[in-house]
Structure formats: C-alpha cells, structure tokens
Image 1 (cartoon, rainbow, N blue to C red):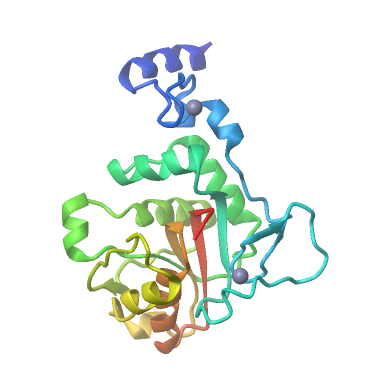
Image 2: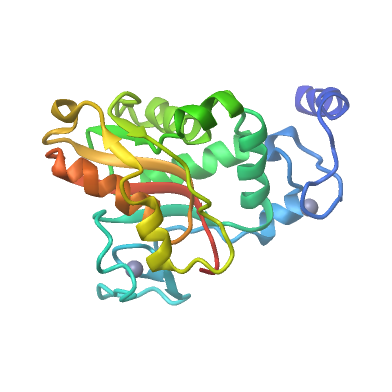
Length: 242
Ligand SMILES: [Zn+2]
Ligand SMILES: [Zn+2]
C-alpha cells in the first residue's frame, strides 16, 4: 500500500515515460526504463559461456572449460566483468546516470548481485575510471564514481579516487575508429598520481561501459607499472558490437 502510494507520488515527480520505448514506467525502482524494457535487457549472470578474460559472450550454453575470444589477449587487465549488455534498460540507465548522479534501485541491485558473483571478494581497492578535470567540471560528477561508491558500500572494499588521473579525453566513439586506433588514442591519457598507494593492491577498476577494452587496458597498464598486483575491471554494461 505504501509502495503504491509512493509510486503514485513519485510518478508525479519523475517523468514516467520509458526512455527506451516511450511506454509508462510503473515503478520508480526501474529508473528511466519500463519493466518490459528491463525484461528485454540481457543480464549477465556469470554462468554463460564467455571469454574467461574479457567476458565476451560466446554462447548461451554454459561451458565447463576456460574459453578465450582471442581478441583481448594483448589487453593489460586481468579480467573484465559486466552486469548487462549495453542496450534497452541498461543503456537508458547509463545515459540517465551521465545526466544526473543517480542510479535507480533496480540498476543498483543488478550491479551489486553481479559484483557478488564475480569473485572480487579478496580485492583490496576500487578505482573508478576518472574523467579528465575539464570533463569533470563540465559534468559536475563522474558516473564511474557513482557506481564505484555503490559497490564500495555494498562490498566493504575501499574506494580510491586519488590514485589515477586522466589527462585528456579523446573522441572515443568516433565512427570508423578501429581497436588499434583507439588503443593508440587512449594511450598516455592516464597517469598514476599515487604509485605507492597502488603498489601490491588487487584493484577493481569501475566504469559505466566497456566498449573495446582500450580504456580499461590503458588504466591497467599504468597501474601495473606502478606495482599493482592485479587489475580487473567491473562495468555496468558492455556494448554489443565493436
Ligand atoms: Zn520501455
Ligand atoms: Zn576476450
């Protein structure tokens, strides 16, 4: 009853049209997408047959053996994990999070449960992929930090926002840019500000979207050079194509 009352009050405050299909969002817990669009969203549980390193989905049938996609061999991170494919409600949630520093309960629960089954319990530090100072000022917040703070609260693993710096942004989503070009463009964008703080740590980098892995790889590269024992990646979502 209270829930219904709250939903009707909140539907007055929050826009109730689904950002994906335009249908109505009936629960404030779903954020900017309706429950149908949430149902259509491919959620990753960790039981799928996927690349053991980057998590690329290979088949719907679970695999008993370690499998590798062959595309992520050169990436510097140890393992990348994500909670959903970047489409439907997951895409809407990420876009909403870039516009306002808010993560709806449904998205929050999704990342926490995926984090729980990712095997990161023994990791010692969460680092959100930073924005450049200029971008941070423009936006007013870093959406990766919102995710990392949520995961820190949930897991008890401390978050560090002063270890990694981003010096500049590139046109990461420029059409026609292949992986090689992206790796080159993102290289040297990241610097470790406090190497001693990163040394020997088992780090989980946190970001909103995994696209080609070049950002994660560039961050992992500098953190490992600073002495990090392990650098894995947790993202809310992963693009379907690249
Ligand atoms: Zn919808
Ligand atoms: Zn892979």
